[in-house]
Amino acid sequence: MFTGIVQGLVAVKGIEEERDLSRIELDLGELAQGLELGASVAVNGTCLTVTRSSNNGGVCFDIIKETLNTTNLGALTAGSLVNVERSFKVGDEVGGHIVSGHVTATASLCGLRHEGHDRVLTFALDLQWLRFVLHKGYVGVDGASITVSSVDRENSTFSISLIPETIKRTTLGKLALGERVNVEVDSQTQTIVETIERVMQDPQMRESMMSQALSGDAE
Image 1 (cartoon, rainbow, N blue to C red):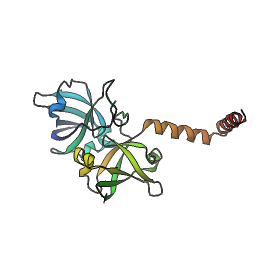
Image 2 (image 1 turned 45 degrees about the horizontal axis):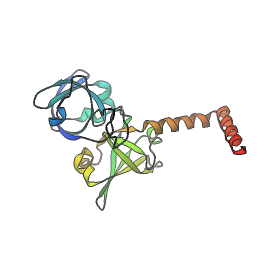
Image 3 (image 1 turned 45 degrees about the vertical axis):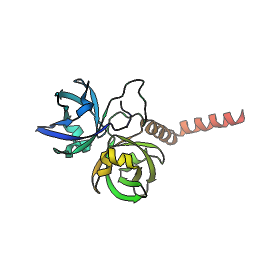
């Protein structure tokens, strides 16, 4: 599990391509200290397993075909920068929100503007996932926990506003129009929305809930 607080903006040292598999090496530097084989690390918000490490801070991860097809990790090349966060420990401060590292979908940057010191990014996201993105709610974007500043359901987009610190410390400050990011919707929001949808689609459940509500009002 992760908190969505990016700990490092690091470079891809190299990539080895095999059939349906990509092996990447990241230069984690000090972030590699104490990192054991089999440990989980979020790379652009995708939970990857450490398969090899070296004394100079290089750490390797294997990325299978499914992950390459459903995230933006398949577009990485040597020298690419990625957001990195090591898994959090019980008792650590959770400055963002709890994320699993299981990417929901990718979204493409379709709008970019500046508002004072802020940079506002607008992403196009498939409607089936946009219904879990709420104004002022949380969303993981390339592993960074970000508050949603606006949602446009008619055009299937959502926007986030970045402060200078986020611009400097993450890949989000370097995105160009058309580039894809990994998105993880908030799991609690998804559960609530799906539960409400099921209730509204089931006449018996809807009637039962209305009866309970009326009964409570009567008391």
